[in-house]
Length: 312
Image (cartoon, rainbow, N blue to C red):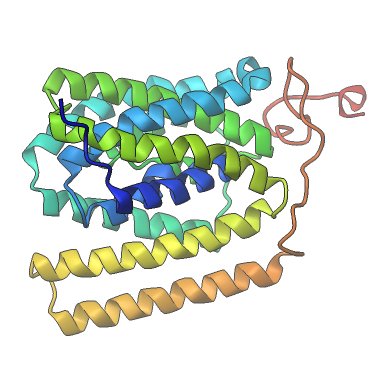
């Protein structure tokens, strides 16, 4: 029996993305997918990525198990809305051409990256009522493109969570979406030999990269790391969008190139602004971890009443 070919470019890419995921709690598929689509198609890449992400996020969930029960009430409304979106996205993946899916990937990612670099922060007061609608949209985007980190991060970061709470609730939602999508892909026959052969090239770098990313987070500022990675993602996505627009003949080469240059300049300006506002690149540790039975009072003061004694 022949061993599956190890894809070196995708393995290197997966290692970098795994370091990012271990450091900030998301970013694996949103880093891998835009570049990997130059080497393969979504129908081959998506099933392999979903299984690897299921393992990654389950591992992150175990790491944050002490606050699992405390964060579950925040996560379940989003998880409850995932399934309809996952089913719709999985079916559409079989209908759309690969180039059209690439266009959706790049067009969805770019504004989300810009919003994160802008530091948009508008907390939703009716989180539980909004959660199922967010979940349906996330499920659709994930099953179609394997990308959900940026929109989820944008949603949860605005809700006043601490670092550990953020990583725990992200892991809860992303484990659920990967599980639902894996079952959906299996029922539709997407786990082909080509997709299965890609799994080792993704999984082995993850086993090394995620622990390394966790270690790096203790040395470098999370905001610095995230800002630099978002900038790199933005440049990659801009280039990918350029190539798709030209291939589909939606724009001339000159117009597409001009638009790409303008996007890169805007992203560079936002990165420069963000880095200037940071106190430094070394890690700034969060407040002490919330205890296993509850949340940080400061982090969720807007949604959980607390007495002066609780705050002390």
